[in-house]
Structure formats: structure tokens, C-alpha cells
Length: 431
Image (cartoon, rainbow, N blue to C red):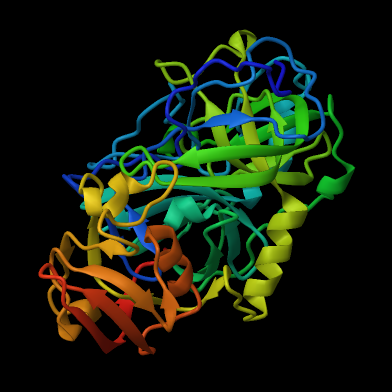
């Protein structure tokens, strides 16, 4: 496939964030704002474009194609996508899926990788939903790295180690939602098999790779999708299926492996079984697994970048975009359809129609926002002394804050009156 820019690329489907895809009855509610916006359902796909990165050499496809979540879900926890072998036991050999340019010894390579993977099952209580993804074990006492979109908004997280079959409760240590990386700590874990971390700076176009993960979200035997690297330094624009909120990941590794829903957070490894990246997005046919010859493509976050973020989280070094510890919860809901909310900021400005700010469609009872007197129809105009010109700005301003923090907030009510007050943030799910 050719991932290089096209002079006139075909109009792609609405780009969507690659997520464990879960369902939830949210109606017009686009997000519940805690430490950031918790975007409705974790069901997404995305369109990708190479942006000045290394040229791709894969066959088939065009400069853009529809991509589905590299993670799965369903309101009832049912898998969606991919005909897997659900009878495989934990720690078993990965089910191989050979693609264009794939190594011939997929099973051998996968056997090196699977004991250091975990299946992640998240419950999203605020959305009445559940989802599944994958994680990579970094330490024997249960430190795991995964995509942030696998756990953002989760009210509880259960993790099963593929190597030993044991299930653990997981705590979110920290996350970087902009770069889609999160670190978990498994409670009471000891003696876990750890991943062999490679050097993504040595990755080359045409290099054989294998993507291993919890495709379909069914757990049990992982799947191994083989292929080759088609491009480096790729830019991927993604937005949520429900809200249309757009984000861009840069520096991604492009591959032609058949990454599937549920694979998010899994290992992209070289022929030696060393982790080069974290599986994040993949194309899929309507039946689940796409035919490699029809131009399947996927993207992974380079492991060097992901590990740099993880090390900052481990060191407790929060920044303007890296959150460490508990997530502060404001408790306002934003309508994806209301004109004053910017229609979900799928593109362009996301400010309210009556000037800068974020329009509120509802407030959680007992939350910080409710206690400060905010209500439906109000527009938040400032937070922590900074002007708010839309949802994404408010999200960013919330990142450094934690439960118990006192923050000044400004808003305009439905009658046009301006107000200021101090909120004490509550405790919410990771953003």
C-alpha cells in the first residue's frame, strides 16, 4: 500500500479514534468532563495519512482507508469482530494470521511474546459500557503499559496475565491522552514474565513484524498478525465515533499487519520478538479480519516514545499533558449536538456559538460543578485563571489537576449573567 500523500486523496470516512469499541446509551451527551473529556463510547475507527514521514513500500490500498478500533467492547461485553479460537487457554501459542511480507515463523515469534501480554477488561460505569484491550508487562511486579484509549473513562479495570492466567485489579498510575499512552499497576502481582523491549529507532521500512494481542476482546489465546513496516514517522488523525472529537498522533509506525479490535495496547515486535511499538489502530473488513491482499494497514506508537512517557509517569513527573495519580472530576456534561457546544468539535473551532466557552448540557449531582452552582445551559468561559475557548482547551487545563484541588472557574449563565467561583475537584475515572 502507498501511504505517501496523494495529490487529491479520496474523501475518507469521518476519521475516528482507534479504541476498544464499546457501546453505551449516551444520547446527545458527548462527554463527562473529569480530568478531561470522557468520550462516550469506546468504539472507533480512523483514517490515516502519511505526513512527510518515511515512504511506505507496502502493496495495495490508497493514501487513506477506513480503520477500526484496535480494541473491542460491547455493552454486554460481547466480542465484536474477528473469528478467533476462543478455546485457547491462557499462555497458549498465539493464533497466527499471515499477511503480505510476514515472517514465515509467526508462531515461533509469537511464543516469545505472549507470556508478557495481558488482557485488559474495563468497565465504564458512567456510560454503562465495557471494553477490552491488551497490555504489555514491563516489570515482574505488574507494571503494564497500554494505550490510554483502552482505559480512559474506566471506573474499574480487571487484567488477566496471559503468562500465568491470573486475574488482577489494576490501578491507573498515569496517562498521556494526547500521545495515547497509559501505565497500570496490577495489585498483588509477582513473578510476571516481562517483555523484551527493543529500539524503535532502528526500525526500517520493509522490516518484517508481528502484531500480537487480544483481537476480538475474547481473551484466551492471543492472535499474531504478521506483516512488514510500510512507513515511519506517520501522522494519524483520529476522532471519536460518537463525539467527532479529533486528535492527531504523530511519529507512528505504519505496517500492513491485520491489527484488530482488541489489539490496542498489544505488542508490535520484530522477528526476534523485541517490542518495537504498541498496536494502536488497524483496518478491518466488515466481517472482522480484513484480507491482507486488499490493503490492510495498521499503526503503532514507537516503543521508544511510549517508554519515555512511561518513565516520566513512573517517576511521578506530571506535565501539562502527562497526568500522574488520581483524576480530578469537574462533573459537567457537554452536548455533542448543541450549537453552543460546537457540535462535538469534529473539526475547526469548538467554542460556543455565543462566544468563547464550553456549553453545558447537564451537571452530575453532587459534583464540583453542581456545588459551585453551574447548570444546564451555562457556558464555562475560564478555568484555573485561563480562558476557555472550547472543550479541548478545558480538557488540557484539567490535566495537571487532582482530586481535592481548588480551582477558580468562570461561567456565563443562560440569561447572560457572568459568574466566578471556586470548585473543589472530586475524584473521577482516568481521562
